[in-house]
Length: 179
Image (cartoon, rainbow, N blue to C red):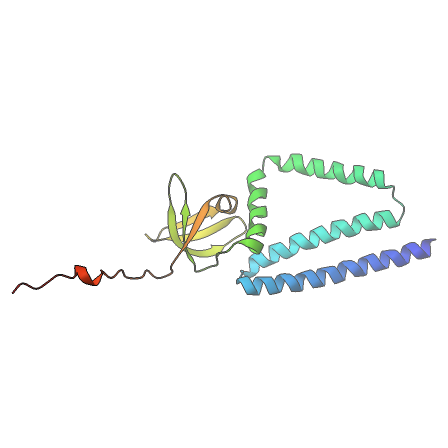
C-alpha cells in the first residue's frame, strides 16, 4: 500500500515542478508580449507558485490518507485566520489582486499617454511604471502621480495620443489679405 502512495507522491511532486516550469514559461511569454517589468513578473510567478504548492500539499494529504473532511477543516480554518488577519489590510490585498489583473488584462502599457476620468480630479499623463501597488503616471505638469491599482481598475481610462497632433484650420477660414 505504501509503495503506491510513494509512487503517487513522487508523481505529484514531479507534476508540481512541471506545472511551475510551464507556468513560468507562459508568464515569461506574456510578460515579454506586454512589456512587463521584471519585478512585477516575479511577483506574479511567486503567486502562481504558491497556489500550485497549496494544491500539491492538499493532493499529498489526500494520497496519504488524511480524511477529506479533516483536510477541509484545516484549510478553511487557516484561510479564515489569514482572512481575519488581513481584513485590516484589505486595500493592500486589493492592490496586489489589481496588479495581477493588470498583468493579464490591462490594455495600456508603459509609455502610453492616458487620462484617468475621475469626478474629483482628472489625471492626464504618461505611464512610467506599473508596480505591485501603484501605477506611476508622470503628469503633463511634470508631477509624478502614484495611482493605486485597485482604483485604476474602477475608473474610466482614456488612451490619448503620445504626441499631440496639430489642429489645422479648414481652408475656408484662412485669413484673407486686404492690401
